[in-house]
Image 1 (cartoon, rainbow, N blue to C red):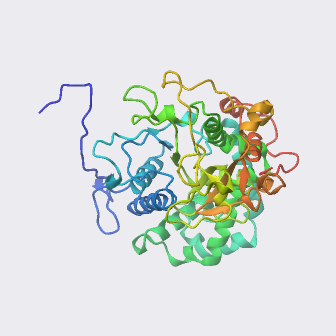
Image 2 (cartoon, rainbow, N blue to C red; image 1 turned 90 degrees about the vertical axis):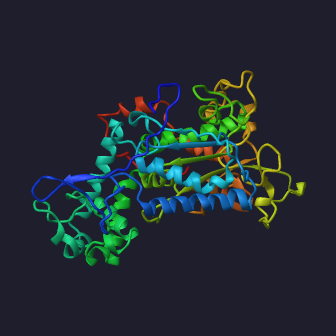
Length: 465
């Protein structure tokens, strides 16, 4: 039957096959290692293994935030308390979908559950990964640091060792392995890691998996891609400062209670903005599908990536917002023995929601329930806040975790900048002060300025302070 009511749309289910060139230059259907011809992945898409591991990540999130801590509800009628976001790359969106499905499978959603909102941006506006394609100044900075890495490593005994292993498989015209060879050394690393993750059918010759060789490749790759965040405030600002600024502003919007925590971006009926479709007035949880370069950039910009290897597949970071409470309150989470530090922390609205106010907390209702109040504190720097506004941040703490490991930000180690007895709980005031130093006022303007300035700072500008 032909559909003629264009007020809504149906979905067409279809079967995809990937066409490529054959030996005689004619079209043939591409196949997988076992002869698979249906649903073969394109570049940038999530593989079956990737879907499996991101689903498992969502299940771990459910176990922690739903089962253990009781922070998120067991059953949801809509997803408007959850801020979902993804970059334009297909695998990032697919990762969000799988993780959300793992956290809230069909059995944890009501029968009338509406489609969840996933926020995306055009590539020109994207700050959820280091966007060197659309930020001219950052492109110049990242190229300079990559060239410096090539100058440091291309003629070393470590690179000679790599060439004894794998140069025989390099293409004509670029037969020496180098940081800037074709393929680049970082591209070889990606291929090695991808094939390791997907079993023997995809494996390269054994020399590519030499332990010493992989360690060398990874060390150089981390320097090429992430040393800029450790040395240059401008690099941090252009590469990841926009994302960090958005995260911090939503935290402050939550504390300020003025609707600027992301709720109105995901709420509202179809075709409209507003509070959650189930009456939600705050964002409790945020989940963004991003990339290894995003995770390492955030960690390195806060000084929490020293000595780390390249982020493994399905890595994640968590930025958690806490509020200190009276130790004598006696509130506990069923089925969990609380640590002393965690006994002093509970959700910001004072209700029985557990100890973890992850990323965002309570938002006060606005007059019309549709539009956020004026920005208030959300986008101000610490220097711009009044004494009264600064007082609102007291008793709030932020914790940064990487693959379930609490990370300590150097500036949060200082006296008065962390929860007594636990340096991983950074005061919100200290965390925001550190983030403010590399938050751009206007990212697009900053991307087109300083084009004639040196790429490297006169002195190393250490992160995390």
